[in-house]
Length: 126
Image 1 (tube, rainbow, N blue to C red):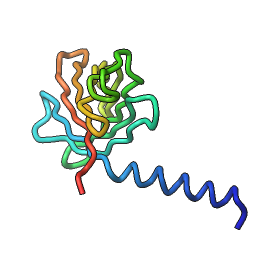
Image 2: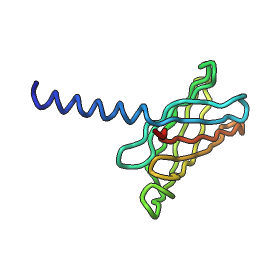
Image 3: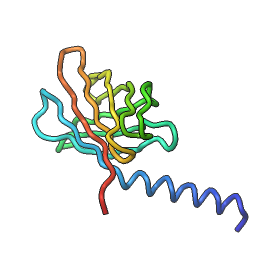
Image 4: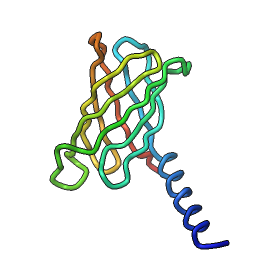
């Protein structure tokens, strides 16, 4: 096996490990129950991506938290930034997120009709 294949395999394995270790949870003011999904933190710039869906899977949302526009005092904690969430029913949210630690961030936003989204993305403890 050549070096480029070994490197490609190692990178793929590392990315897959990160994706399975983060959960996303959220609530929409006009949708009953908790939304659940996965989080995909950015490796070096802060922020990241996350997905949320309702219990039936009929409503699915994809969110992106852009790199921070406010830098925290101790690395990730206190960082904050903007982002957006788009859902399968057409709604869009402008969000604001804040880092709680290097393994956890929370956020909220509102759509054009005033419906509120709150969410959190955190590393699962092992």
